[in-house]
Image 1 (cartoon, one colour):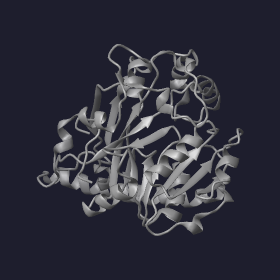
Image 2 (cartoon, rainbow, N blue to C red):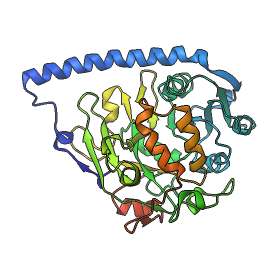
Image 3 (cartoon, rainbow, N blue to C red):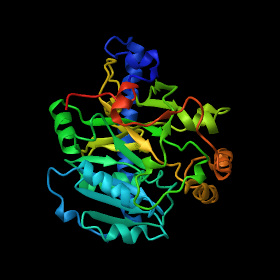
Length: 359
């Protein structure tokens, strides 16, 4: 992600650390080891919250790429979502439905390449669904390349219109990579977000054609060594006065899963800590990365925002984000004169938002 400005500590190596700093590093590594064990235990306990609805996991083959997703009331997006990821090469989908009332669960349950669990437990108290995902990854994902995304995220990477996930993951393995990072890139229309019609099954990119090419900023978090990327359209429009509250935009959605792995903060960070070296490794070398085209700003966002403000399930300190939801319910315009019209993955590569490998 060489289009993102990074701070000096991203390129620092530990080999030359003074003794005091080395001891601190060892202590932090010990703390993170125990944190990972606690997260894995939380995930294992969360199995009691999940009710199996449809289990087609017996059809999973050893080389299959899996997709895992928590959803709620996504029947409008699901037809395109399933079609996109099937074309990309996903062989099996593992869904957790968190209390949908719009037929989403029935739609998924009818698909032979999908398995579905349901829960009415708190999304927030499950660490925003990550406890459930960590459990299902440990149960079905070990040894597989696993893609963990939301229904409003369209995974793309260099030449993704001609190179499928099987070819990409084979190259990643050959190159000794265990994970593949992606920048979450907000897409929006050139008018008020609620005014552009969207038909079920249509490509969201037909309605959402624009994005912010920058600025984005990144810094390395010292404790877990993960990047923290912020900026872009949502910060510009909704968090201009409070940029520290703007969304975290870096994710690690594609991972060759092992039983000892755990997502920590959504898919923004992972343990063990070395998995957070996506984008830029600890020696400062750029790593191949992609983009999650974020299609949150379909016309449905206006009514959904009012509902999510009431539910208070999406942020740790929900009251801090009431103004954000209020702004969304007012049908805002995100487009501005410096907005860039989306053309495809090659454009994102040229802008430095995607870094290609030779797959």
